[in-house]
Image 1 (spheres, helix red, strand yellow):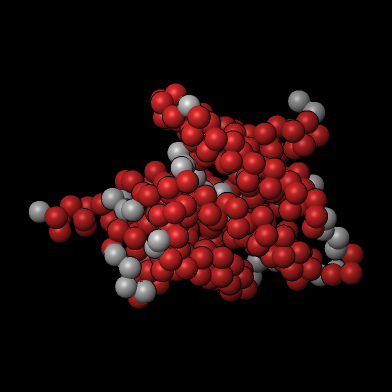
Image 2 (cartoon, rainbow, N blue to C red):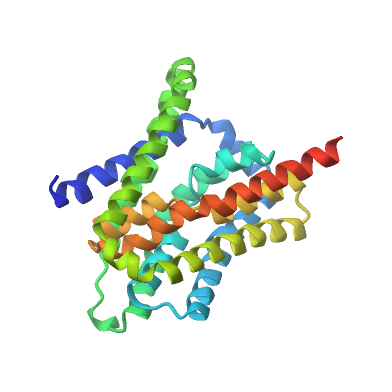
Length: 290
């Protein structure tokens, strides 16, 4: 298949479908609920939109990453939380309503927060700030089309045809997961030599970032005196990223497939730490509920 068709049409379409499935699980009541719980929302915003990029940057410096991979991980850190965070929250016996609502809010907010971080990262890590040119308007427009519009359409379908949407949502979610795997495999196959030569350092970094952010989100929520279920949720929401968006931004907007490697790798490895965290929290909850 032609590379331009894959990066220009197929990848954005897959991401849009994934976000549409998120919209199928949302109602306006979810947004009202999170507004009524402003402390949980504010803590989530602090962890996801401020601490995550800052800690990612500090770890990049500590691991000695630079250039393409450093930029790729910063793109990943600037992305919203992934839709699969809702499933992990369910497994962990966290606050699923908060997870779904925060995922939606984060996806919309990213339209405005992602471009500045990407621009700064490219200027900082490229070593040639004068030559870096990032289409900010185009990036914001594409993010809106790939995130905001599909979520809105999914919510509209849920509102107009609620019964059918609820029946179809589980199938759509499974299909979205399969499509995500195909995206990751495609990115890995296209840049296999680059990934093979750097797998050791990149995998170690990805796992470290994942575990640190799981602990950070959980700890900060606890310090803010949120409930344990909310703390578990925000730990997951802070660490589980929309790796699909990171790949699409790298391949489609910035047109550099090598930048997609960190997103693809993290998109797979984040489930290792995420599942351990989720099942550990679930077991802890069961012990204290007996």
